[in-house]
Image 1 (spheres, rainbow, N blue to C red):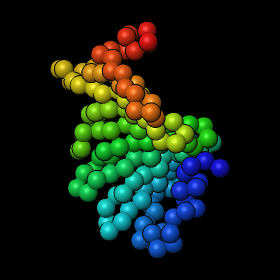
Image 2 (tube, one colour):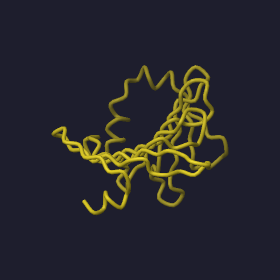
Image 3 (tube, one colour):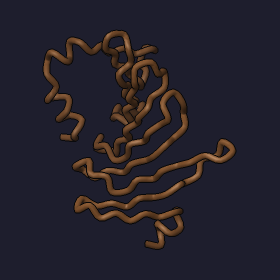
Length: 141
């Protein structure tokens, strides 16, 4: 059983009543979840396998997601992408292990609307951190 299944089973009934599910198109692979008229998150599924590909999370007053969690073939979250609120500009990608501990963080900056890796941070659960200025140095390590 994947972590998403555990989260779904652990949800209180009270929460399920207040959150509304909506598909904008019949048979869509994307399902939106609303509370108090605002989008909380949406699930995107693989059309062939019906497994969750990613989950996008929203802040109030923004029509674009601020965070996207990507899942592997077992529907476990392995990468979390952060966006600048209200835009498609990627601020960082955080790669997490099975217990949600980050082990690599890639931060981005933009020059002339082109994304470039600003730094890569390698971490472990013991608090050790190593910072790399580019992917070349990261892969050499």
